[in-house]
Image 1 (spheres, rainbow, N blue to C red):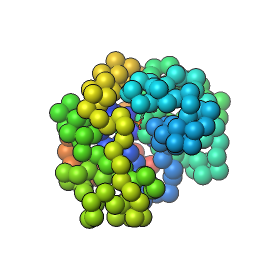
Image 2: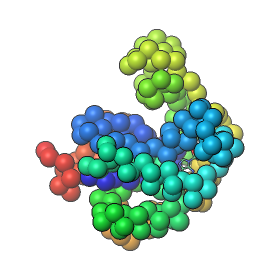
Image 3: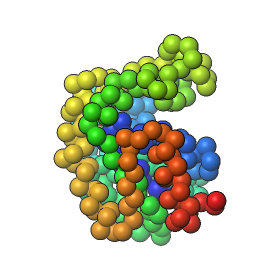
Image 4: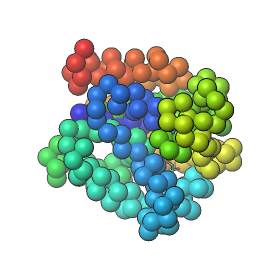
Length: 220
Ligand code: AMP
């Protein structure tokens, strides 16, 4: 099963992807996580991407496409994967289509998580991430048991540089301009499902899961 999770920052794509992953063992491919790791490890890719990522701008399409093309060749991706935060431009979507054609496969479904700006800003300002295992917390409704410590692995929690107020507003702008047109792109292909991302996690996940059952992509 190959899925795209589309939506503004803070819509909960990563959290839903992790929930799906708990039920069926297909990897989450988050281009944002790959870029952040490269920046942390100071690799060539990290150096090229750093300025874009910290200011909330999009990393150039050719860099993103080479990351994706390399990642989906890995063994763990052969039974499927979920893209979180990719594609983000029409150009990336077109190039993904041709990559899928070349590999003789296709994207099964695109989930678009629709969220209002006020919910996004609130969620992102209160988001904390584990530096060790990547688990995602929210200080409001999913806070860790011990302040700043990951419940799952004991790692230190941190606030992403781009989750600061000024950058959040810029990321929303970039999403509306560059990524929102993808909704129409996939609607025309007839493989888009809209999910109300303002609702709480349990309901969002049920909506996604029920849709996957209906589509015959997972068992009951
Ligand atoms: P995310 O973790 O998905 O919110 O991504 C964090 C940042 O990484 C974004 O604000 C962009 O700077 C960069 N990024 C991640 N995925 C992409 C993509 N598909 N295209 C361009 N830039 C990306």
